[in-house]
Image 1 (cartoon, rainbow, N blue to C red):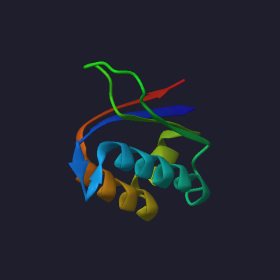
Image 2: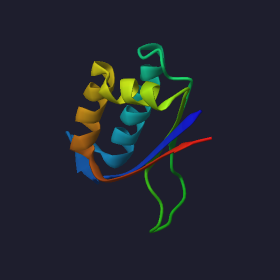
Image 3: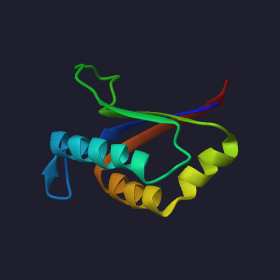
Image 4: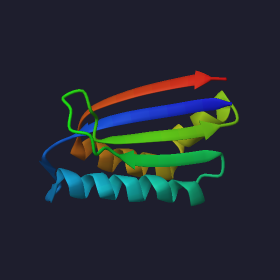
Length: 100
């Protein structure tokens, strides 16, 4: 099993929306991938509520059966559309992929 975790810090304003609005939009479009990319075993998105300099704004936790399935997800056209939007609204991105 492959675990794929991504965290983002968002711009205060981007694409004509505030940070909180973009966080909600990200959550929605990322969760919509569950019905569009069949290699996703599990996917959840959380919006941070903690006030801390160390906190990120949005986190993605997802699971895949194999490294090959993770690659299919990353290269899927629907995922690429989501990445295009996220890249416009984010300041920072951190990711970790690991196998259990």
